[in-house]
Figure 1 (cartoon, rainbow, N blue to C red):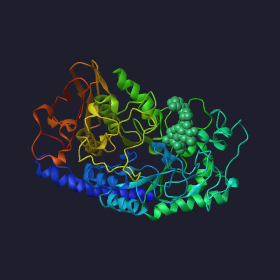
Figure 2 (cartoon, protein in one colour):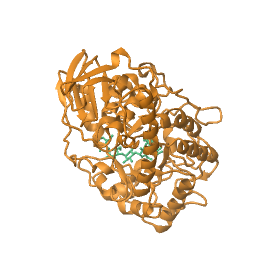
Figure 3 (cartoon, helix red, strand yellow):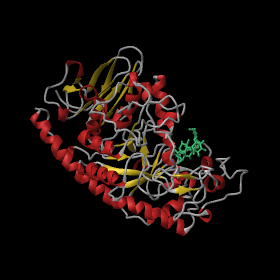
Figure 4 (cartoon, rainbow, N blue to C red):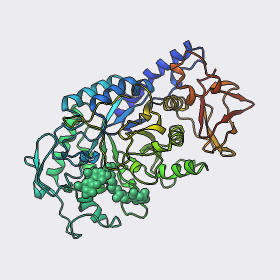
Length: 494
Ligand code: AAO
């Protein structure tokens, strides 16, 4: 996080802390000094959700639940096709897409900012379209593969000449990955100063609309020095998150991109997902620098994203309770900045979100609640970000703050750990009810499970019977049904 971002986050954190402290006090729970709550830091990717719908989610859910930022789908004009991935084929840098107009984008940023949620835009700057035939973009701009009138001509693109069709064939070749075409997408020559300047002016335009930063799509396919030069031209506080998928044995590694921002650490989900699925959880290496992971303050971590949920390995909404469990464990960890993912159900990998007659994505409203993940039809939003469990875990995370994650314990299939003196989580990925006792330095007493009951700051009614967890003699005792997650924290005492 850069300096300005840290300041904004700290101010927001104080405001949120003040709200939590006062509500917790009126609910008769243990008092907390303002400084006892960390600033919100978690984000959520709202995939293929329209700008107006994102603004609604900011007000109804993201702000109240304590998300710090939202990652949008790409905001620039794209090819006019139905698949979701049309968004990743830019035709121009006009802010006019099937997700909404420029005015709607600006209004979204304003409404989200007003409730303390920063907007991170997905910046597709590595390439333009992958279409071989000439066409017209969503907003009416004409284009050809290497011709974008008024913007780019053939000389602005790489023509790598290293493979038969100029497409990347070998990820072990740095030169191919960074100068050939990713799945036929016309690859901008980002070593060129004029290309960089035009990209910078696009990003500056988005900053002028109030965005806080960018996901740099396909960053691996641009030399780190090219991305760095572009980032260096932006205001210092601009938040940068580079997408550099860690590939086993590949020469280009995420660490090359950490000097000027954060990176998405793909290893995190690859480690945790299979453990949750197999029901056999163990501690990661809890040393300061986790092996095969970028440094803590550079890592953006997640359980799935729009690419991995379409792959074979990731835990996704289809995994129901286990998916929520993995996301709870993500939020409970003391490594990296977590980003949740909220998309829509699909059976066809390419299927776009439902649209209106004019081609714009239909409004979608979570109504403040997550969907029942077990009964979604294609196109239904998962609304994971709106779940009670996630809301409770976001509060848990702020209470845990900077307290270190302590070594975990097993109890049969169950597993749990403490964030020292602040909060405890326990999960049961097994298929039968399981008891587990987690050592803790939390004061003895009766606590409320925030996964079941939600944030205590919203709860004036006391804890439901099933959510009461007892801490006595330095241990928290949980009884967990199959697939259940439970979590208690210092400020959620019954
Ligand atoms: C579409 C069509 C194509 C057509 C093209 C042009 O599907 O058939 O040729 O249009 O008309 C998205 C869609 C694409 C779509 C594209 C453009 O996913 O299907 O193409 O829009 O509309 C690589 C990149 C990474 C990229 C990922 C998809 O490095 O940057 O491929 N992600 C981003 C976006 C993504 C988007 C684009 C980029 C393009 O998030 O949504 O594409 O803007 C290895 C490498 C990775 C590589 C993958 C996939 O990963 O390491 O760098 O990602 O392979 O090729 C294990 C390994 C790991 C491996 C992974 C593969 O985990 O450890 O190394 O498996 O799953």
